[in-house]
Length: 301
Image (tube, rainbow, N blue to C red):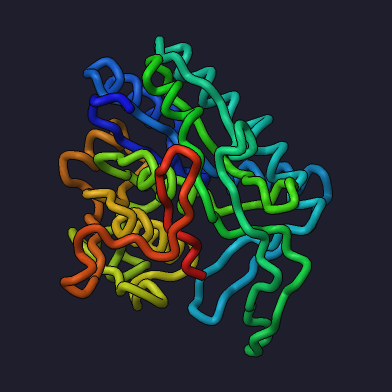
C-alpha cells in the first residue's frame, strides 16, 4: 500500500452537493501528494431517472428511524444505470479535465465489495413494524482491496459506488456511506470525510447554524436524537469506520468551495464513538477477512 496520506471522500447524492467543487478539491489534494478514494451515491440522479422511466420509488423506515431505499428489481436497474452510467462518468470526466487520473468502479469490479443479501428488512408502515422480504439490498461482509490498492500505487483516483455482489453472484444495493466507511477501514485510511447537503450534524434540523462541532455516536443501536433519515445512516457509517480503525471521521458541507480541505481543517462535525475502554483500540466487530488480510466490519443493522 502507498505510504502517502490516504483520504476517503464520500460525495453525497443530494442534488445540492457541488460535485465540481469536490473534484477541484480532490485535484488539489492529489497535487499535494495525497492519495484519495472518491466514493459516491446519487439519490438525486436515481430519483430523476426513476421518474423519467416511470419506476415508483419507496423509502423504508426502520424502527430506529433510519431510512433506506426500497430496492425491487426495477429500482436496482435504475440505481445501476444512474450511478454507473450517469454520476460516475461525470465525476471521472471532471477529474480528468482537472488533470487527475481517475478510474470509475462499482463494487462488482474485481469482486471488490461483497455483501449478504438481507432476507428481510424491518420497516415501519402506518405505525406498525412489518418485515419486507423482496428487497434487493445487502449488508457488506467483505472488502477486497487489491484492485483499489493497485490503482492508488499507480497514482490513480478510484471513483467507487454501489452495487455490491452477493453470495449468489448477483448485484445488490448497498448504502454508499457505509461503502465509504468499509473502504476506509479496509484500506487503513488516515481519514474519512462524508460530504452532504448540510453543514454537519445539526442540534436543530431546522437551524443551519446549529452545527455540532463534535458528535459522539453510541457504540450500538440508533445513532442518537439529533439524527434522522439520511444523517442517521451517515453516523452509522462513521461509527463503522471508527470501530474499524479509521482515526478521523468528519461529516461536512458538500455545497461549498474547497469542501474536503475545509473539513480537514475542522469545519463540520467530528464524529467519535462511545466505546468501552477495552474496545477503544483495535476493536473490529463481526469481521470478514479479504484475501489480502484486510478486514471490515459487518453491517450493524
